[in-house]
Image (cartoon, rainbow, N blue to C red; front, side):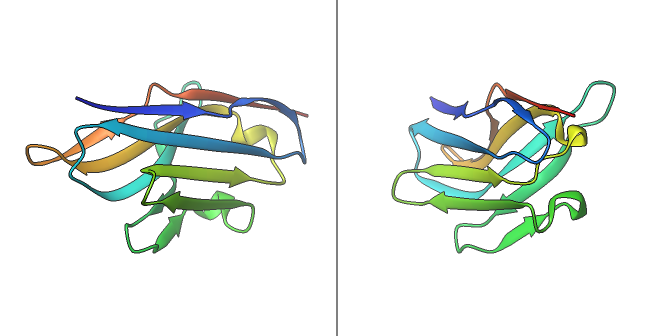
Length: 118
């Protein structure tokens, strides 16, 4: 009944920029935290950035100063602006949201590939 759909991934050269977007839809009463995780081949999934409903943000040290997370509570969307991309940012990026629908639950998008070439 709840679905997250990401968009905006792709291939970019090192130093370039990409913007990821994620929209939550379905039977949503309330959304708490939203964010982005990523998983590179052979590595564990890691937090990239998160934002609360009040706008407080948290970033992985590796992306501070380069990535910016934002959300639109009226549209149930979260975005990630990624600048100064590096080859080590290459991964599948997953949208995440903690949503109230018959209780609080964690939801994930299917993922979008980001590839940064050197």
